[in-house]
Each structure stands twice: as C-alpha cells, then as structure tokens.
Image 1: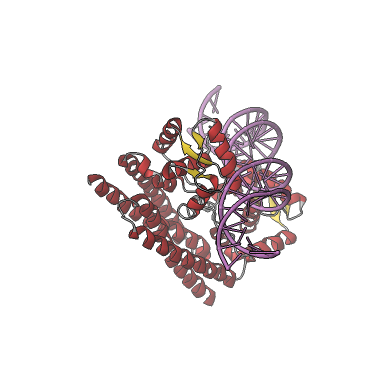
Image 2: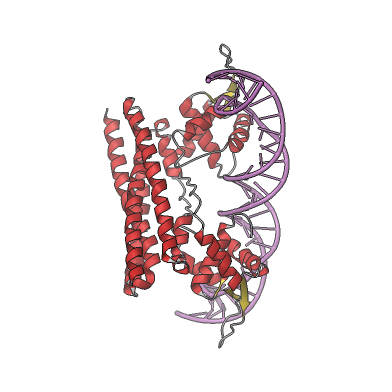
Length: 183
Length: 183
DNA sequence: AAGATCATGTAAATCGTTACATGATTGT
DNA sequence: ACAATCATGTAACGATTTACATGATCTT
C-alpha cells in the first residue's frame, strides 16, 4: 500500500464496518455518516477497490440473490483486517486545514467591512443548515440502541459542538466588525 | 490565473497586506499568522511569485539597502489589487475537511477502546499546546493597537474557541468511552 | 571554523477533483 | 415511455507535498 493512502484506509475501514458492500453502497453510507469529516468520490472509490483486491486486502464475493442487480460486492480479508488495524493504532497525522473563509477574513482590511460581514452571514446560513442535518442524524442514532452507535455519536457530537461554537464566533465577529465600522 | 488557484490568492493577499516582501518573508509571516488555517510551502511560493509576476499582478522591486542580502522583493500592482479584490468579494467555497482523527474514531469499534482513548488524549496534548501558542499571539496582538488588528483577532478568536470546544469534546468522548467499556 | 538561518529554486511523486462515458433497472 | 437512480468505471487536469539541490551570510 502506498505511503499515505488515507483514502484507501477510509474505504477499507468502511468495508470492515459494513462487512460486505459494493462501491456504490460504500459511498452512500459515507454520505450518511462520515460526510462531514471525510468524503470520497466514486472516481476514487472504484480504483481503490481494485487496488485493495490486487493486494488481497479485500475479495469480491458472489452475491446474486433473487433478482439483485449486478454489482461488485466485497468483503475484507484477514490480511486486510490486520493492515487496517495497524493503521488504526497509529497516531493520526495532523489535520492540514485550509479555510478559505478565514483567509478572506484575514485579508478583510483590503475590502469594505460589509464584504466580510456578508461572508460571515452566508456562513451562518450554511452552519444553520448543517446543524439541522446533524440534529436529524442525532435523532436517528438515538432511536437505535445508542450503545451500538457510540462511535457515530462521538463524531457527531464533534460536529454539533463545532457548529455551535462557529455560530457564536460568527456573531461575535459580525458585532466586532459593525462596531469597528462606526469609528 | 488558473481556475481555483487558492494558493496564488493566498500569496497575493499576503503581499497586499505586507506592501513589499520576499518569498522568504512571506512564508515567515504566514507562519506567524495564518499558519493554523492556511499554510504554504517554499516550493509553492516561489513558482507562484514567478507566475504572478508574469501575469503582471506583482512586480519585483529593487531594494538593496545598506548591505542587505540579495533577495527578490515584490509588491502588488494595481492589476493585482483588482484581481485580488474580485476574489475577496466572491463567496468562499466550502471547506473540504479531512479529519483523520475522526475517521479513526469512527472506526473505533474495530479496535480496543483504549486505542481510541489514547488518540483522544494525544489530541488533547496537541490542543493544549496550540492553545498556549494562540494565547501568546493574543497577548502580542492586544499589545499593539487592537483596532489595527481586528481581522487578526477575529481569525484568532476562531482558533481559540474551536480549540476550547475541542478540548471539551475530547473530555466528553473519553468519558463516554470509559463508561461504555465497563459494560 | 562551524552551525544556524537566510534565500531561492527544481523535479518527481502523489493525490484529488471534474468531466466524460455507458448501460441497466426501477418506479410512475 | 420517461425520469430517476443504480452501478461502474476512465481520462485529464490541477494542485500539493516531499525530496533534492545550492550557496550566501550571520552568529558564536
């Protein structure tokens, strides 16, 4: 496996959780769970599945139950599990963030104050939407036995608390900009 | 300029703020200010400066004051300013996040609980360090006239509040994992 | 004299996104 | 019949990171 290959591990891990899945389903599951901290596209998933199969970390299995569509369903192999586990044990690398909003705000003195305020207000809308999506996911997760969803709830809690903090920060920033404008 | 070219705008914007700077100084300034939400490497900065010069968005200026080292100092041109401003007005794209810690936590059920707890505790250390760096920067910014540093303070406030929230989240997550372990 | 830091770059590898392409099946 | 969505891929491009490379100047 390549040096970094984070996408490969994302796919391998999802497959380990799902037990058996096609590339298509994998994507759909990620959209409903990891979307806000990790996403993959079909264009990355399919080649990765081939790669993983070549490395014998996963195998294609024949499931063609009653009138099922033709699709490539995979499961993880023992080798795959051990490669995945080794990665999970390693201390995660630093997240390299690139926040375009913050960059534009940092350059704020180069444009009228109202531009920065506009960006912040647009961002608030996004955050509010995100929050409602998170709340829905939370409701669904709490409906099933929450002890089964411990890890989902932890990552979700991260998302919710970050969003709430961001909303408060937006308000503070808007207030600061409005008052600095008056001077 | 290329379609996205966010790095180019980061360089162009820094140059606009600094009035005149070499690639080297630009990098140093970014390390002291935007590092936690935007970073560039020398390998990207130098080619970008050449590019921007070719496009006449910046010009090399001759500063060779008393025994100064030889270095390429640039300033932004009027064209550069207008290209930069146009970009600053545009609504920033969504941030595409990839958080490896959250991904590993999401896969937490595949490894012993203590592994996830370890990751969280390591992360807390990082966050604590980051917080102390932020506090130092804050002290320095408040020392100079804070009305001059509005935009720096806003981005810094973002960093500090995110870190504080993350620390609280870590504690909640660790607590949850410890209690789920007992069952 | 030596080590740190200033200062600038090139080349290769890696990685990720976007656009393109195709066809089957299901629901209305 | 038609639209939506299931399902899988390829190709091109764009962007970023890492490794490599070099030499000057400053500090101790």
